[in-house]
Image 1 (cartoon, helix red, strand yellow):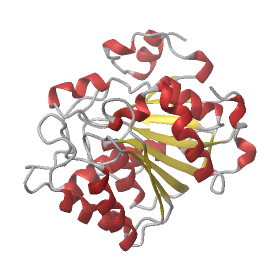
Image 2: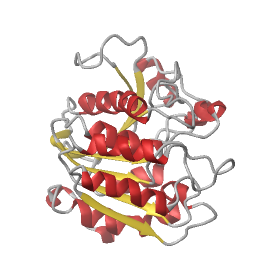
Image 3: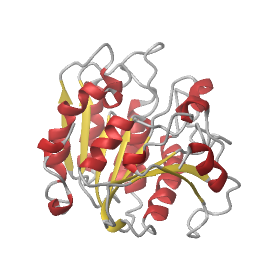
Image 4: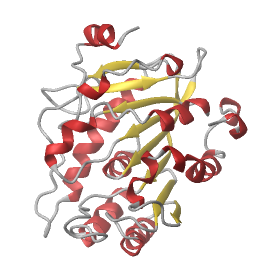
Length: 299
């Protein structure tokens, strides 16, 4: 099915970078997720655009909700498009996961008003920003759990940068079926051109993470890189300590330097063999392994 046909069915206006052929081997489908479909999120004017990807067969498959980051320059938010990180998504599908990729309000294919503004750099309100991001993640999760190919009882939230932070925020709502979170370089307030390595309000972020951790009931894998120009490891270590002190369960991994700025490691195809073993080891006790293909069949 062509991208144009899918767009006409779903009412989605595709961004320029989405003119590429639909990935038929991943059963790629563009959908619209109503924000108020499940009566959880109040009255919102804009639904969010999401893309689903499925393994072959009827399932049911465990689910990954994959969340995108946020560029430092607000003018670049439309460039998120549909966040088609196909090598990474293909890896998840080959592992046996269904994947849904929501585009949060104010970004890319969804557009509209940006709801995740944390305020000033000196006194950011990360808690309010995180809750807004969480609403979009939770809406996509709830939508995907209605699909017949999806196992609603085995859900993993995965996100990079602001998407990792959004995943932590969403997990604090303890949604039904959630079994784990994988946070790739998560956080907010970083800007490598203005204050490399040191994000705005690191203590406010620690406080927010502690707040979210206090109601998070699943383990979290924190995956970071030594040369992260958004969030240096020393700062992230204080966030992880706050997470643990508030009752959060999980582990933190800091990889050796990767490229010029390790913050974007997840988006680089060549990094998949680096993070994939940690990903699999972390999820093995949490997701039924009969639904996951052996690692030697990947890549």
